[in-house]
Amino acid sequence: MQGLSFQPAITALNRISEFSNISQEEEPDRKINIQGINRVEFKNVTFSYGKKKALENINLTINKKDKVLITGPNGSGKSTMVKLILGLYKVKHGKILIDNQDIDIISLSSLRDKISFVSQNVFLFNDTIRNNILYSKPEATAEEVEKAAELSGSSDFINKLDEKMDVIVGETGRMISGGEKQKISIARAILKDSDVVIFDEATSQQDAQSIERIEALVEKRFKDKICIIISHRSIKNLKLTKIIRLLDGRQD
Ligand SMILES: Nc1ncnc2c1ncn2[C@@H]1O[C@H](COP(=O)(O)OP(=O)(O)OP(=O)(O)O)[C@@H](O)[C@H]1O
Ligand SMILES: [Mg+2]
Image 1 (cartoon, rainbow, N blue to C red):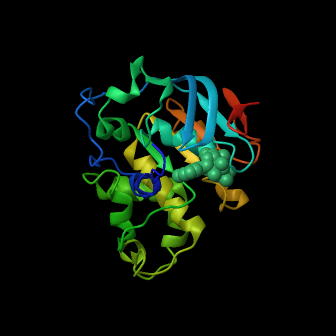
Image 2: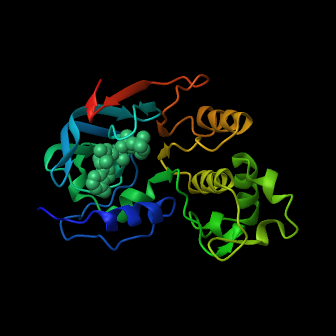
Image 3: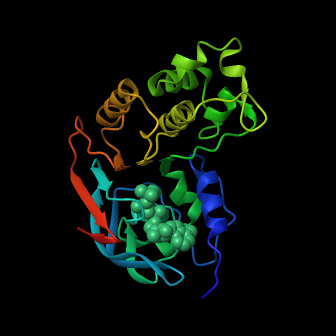
């Protein structure tokens, strides 16, 4: 499939980030609705964008409660692994299994419902901070939103705003910093309470104190969840179950 454009999937990745009810890519084969995720397996996964090989023969098993660090230089394939777990692309060589089922037969909305994705590029809607947090769980109570804002560290900057959580952010709203956006994204993940939480360079714009807060969150509140952390930096204060080092798409 030469000349295939991958741009729509990237846009999708930015948009699905933390909310779940997206189904535009549903396909007839995806008949299984999963109720949870306890294991993610890569079996001899090789993946290319057109002719460009991004991952080669990746083998990895991630179990419930695992805290996995994926590290490696720019372009080594870290985000690609995450995109495959989110079902943004299909694997042609090898398999990805979710609780022993081929990811290709799982409905994308049920898959993404079980995964929170905190990324470097956080998508904010032109809406209030409150509603931006609520996107991951629209039925959440005001108390749950407050708690998520507090645990994510969002309260620190929200409390300095005159309108607090009711201030409009997003492209036409008040500008907030990259680090603040990431905090909102972490608040969404707390509220969503999904089985898997993926941080893709989610600490890149955070100061030392905020990084400590995220580490504490992973260790305590996300203790029973699968956490996949992508980072160029080593992580000092977290007990990791596995470290995957990628180099040119291969496990180092
Ligand atoms: N949509 C795409 N189309 C074509 N090639 C892509 C696409 N996305 C990534 N690539 C290529 O695949 C390789 C792996 O990219 P990936 O984004 O997974 O790297 P990464 O390890 O996350 O890098 P970074 O640390 O810069 O975020 C790179 O060579 C990249 O240029
Ligand atoms: Mg990346």
